[in-house]
Amino acid sequence: MRPRLFFSAITLVLGLGITAVQASPEFWRYEWPDTDFEQTSVESWTEILSGGPPKDGIPALDDPTFVDAGKENRIGDREPVITVEIDGETPRAYPIRYLTWHEIVNDEVGGVPVAVTFCPLCNSGMTFDRRVGGDVLSFGVSGKLRNSDMVMYDRETQSWWQQAIGTGIVGRYTGTELTQLPSWMESWAEFKARNPEGLVMDEPKWRRAYGRNPYVSYDSSTRPFLYNGEMPPHGILPLARVVRVGDRAWPVERLRVEGDVTEAGVTISWNAGQASALDSARIDQGRDVGTIRVRDAQGNDLPHDILFAFAFHAFWPDGEWMLAGS
Image (cartoon, rainbow, N blue to C red; front, side, top):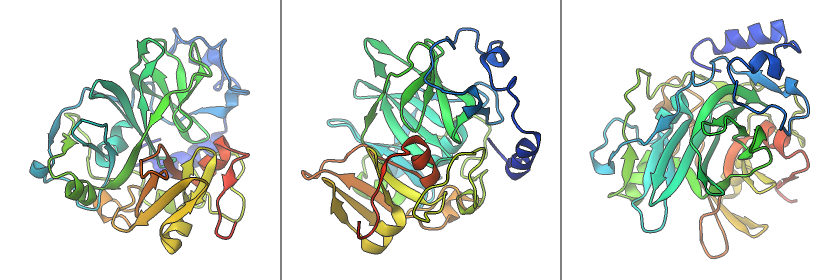
C-alpha cells in the first residue's frame, strides 16, 4: 500500500471486504501466467491481499550505483540506512529513503548476489543471498501482502516469496528458504563515522519524493494495515518494534530501558540516534527509535530483523517473547 491515499484506502478496503474471487489463482492468472499456483504452502488464498499497486508497481532496483560516503550530502544524519558489510569488501549503505519507494535492491557485493529488502508495513529490513542451488535469482515486488508483509517474486520462475521469513510460498520454490545475511539498520551518521571510506547507494533515477515518508504516523497506529490476524500477547502493542533472532523476539522498549542484554546466546545493544522512517513526513525528523546491533559471543554480527510485534506473532505464533524478568 502506498503513497498518500494510505488511510482512505484502509477504510475503502475494509469497507468493501475481500471476495473469494479476488483471492484466488483464477483472478491472478492474467497477471501471473507463469506462476505455478498448484505448488503452495498457503492454506487459504484469502491470506493474500492486494496492497494497491500491481506487479512491479513498486519498482525494485537492479545493479545500483554508489558514491563515496564522504561526498554524499542529501541524507540527513538521523536517517536510517541498511548496512551490508561483507569481509574484504567496502561497507555499503542502502538508505531507507530509497527503499521506502522501491522495497528491493538486487545488488552484488564481493561476488555475493544480494537482495536488500524493506517492507514499510512491517518495518522489516532484511538482506538475503540471491543464490538458490545453482541459480541466481532476481527479485521484484508482487504488489501482494500476506499478514501485511510484502510478497516478493523471483523473475526467473515467477515464484512468490514471503519477505519476513525469506521463504517461497507459491510456485516452484515453495518451501525453499533464502539465506539471510547479517545486516542492520543504523543512522547515516553512525555509518559514516564507522566507515568514512564506505559507499552509499546513489539516488535512483526515478521520479519519487525521496526523503519523504508516505506512511506518516503509521508506527503510531493502533492497528496494522490489511491485517486480520491475532494481536501480539503480553499487552505488547501491535506496532511496537521487536528484535527477532530466530524464533525469539525482544521488545525494543525493553532494550531502550535496559541497554545491552545478553541472553539466549546473543548480545543485543540499543543506542539512540536513529530516526523512525514511519513517523513524520520527513524521514530525518522522525522520532528516535535507536539503533540495534545483534552479536554472538565472539562479537560477530548475526542475521536478525526489527519488525513490528504483530508480524512476529503472525509468522512465529509459537515464538518466544523475551520479556524483562523472563
